[in-house]
Image (tube, rainbow, N blue to C red; front, side, top):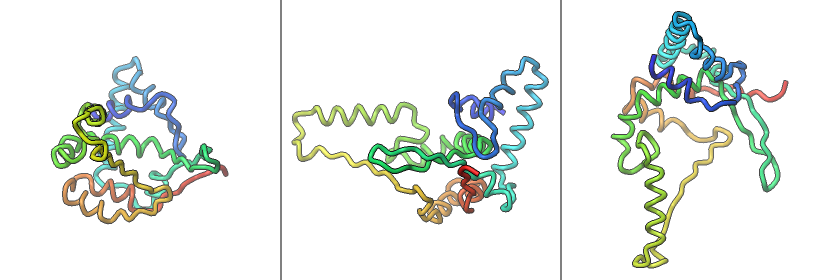
Length: 192
């Protein structure tokens, strides 16, 4: 129940709801209940749902709805629009709890090559390392290189099958959730 409460509290204030209309504030209100028995029962029920879904018990017929998103059109500075997808709070909570469950294992598998998962202060360390390198006059300017990779997946065009293979191999306890979340075409909703 601790990870579920942590996941609920981690939603930023004012987070938008997905297609179901459930807002993080609804879940936060449950945790803020002054009646301990009510708060405990509600948190136990939410935890049971999270565990049920992580365990791969989301019916395929429901996956496209639970894992769907509400689309918003955001204006680009250069003109045009960018689709912003806001997923259901239920799916986002389950995924947060799944990430908490594997953060330590993921960090030990991925280090030292990456610093974004399960490594406290690592992104700050990268910024300081780059700053130090650029400020070091002993390093020739032509040797000061930084590569940033940004994966383009705006319209879900990426092939996820290699990721599924690695998830099954490295995190089999999460494979069913990941595949039910990303293995089907979700229902993006916009307007009516």
